[in-house]
Length: 164
Image (cartoon, rainbow, N blue to C red; front, side, top):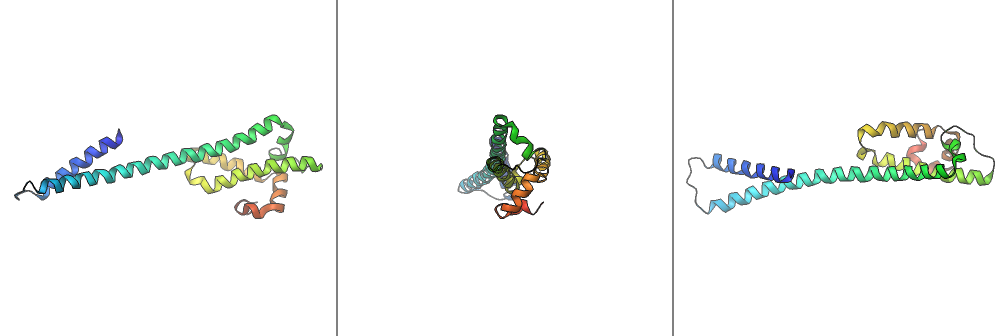
């Protein structure tokens, strides 16, 4: 609907420009197709601009949905395995059991992949939501298990490893 309204305004503007430029000049019927072509071109440019704006909004939505999906994966794991929560949110020390370490590291990898995605795509995240994600990031990066993981594997997450 907005595209049609803008196209009508563009055509009206082209007609107005046509009338202003041709005031006092004899206009033949041969000039009309030229001006109509101009009006359609202006309307087309405005239409493309509006489509680009809608594409940008769509991209923001898709990026944010991807971030939410990754976050939901972490939530699902923690619902199934609540004993792992303390290692990524509550400051628990690195577990001694090799099996538990592997489980925690897998969860940390998922969380860090999400944060890495957040860094890359932050320009597409709604401003009103970005601070909450930054708070999440700051909390996660201060966890002993995450700090150790980044010391061991920081090269994989160069942008995040620099923050701790």
